[in-house]
Length: 128
Figure (cartoon, rainbow, N blue to C red):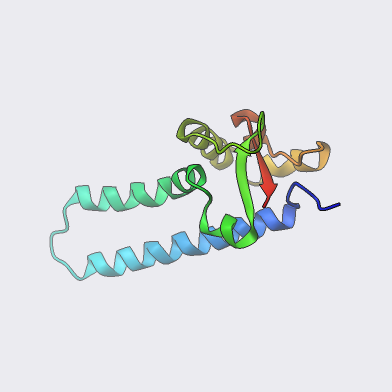
């Protein structure tokens, strides 16, 4: 029988793919903006916020690029056939950032391999 929940390694690989993508975007944005004089602060803020909101927004509409490459998705714990809403995605992302790698400590102690940020936001990662 195929395992329904992703292993820790798959989740880490997905995070690393997304991290490289975000860092690449930061470098590209920085290079683009350095070519202009007097870049408005609001534009810098919009670019920063867009990078910050990448994961929560992508998670609600299907998955991040890393999730898609690794074929894993975030779903509602109560019904893993349903996508999460933006509120759940923001809560999940907040706690993921707050706890960092410590959030993954619970993956080994529960049957659905849920991290702390999954438990607190009512989500679960599944393989597709």
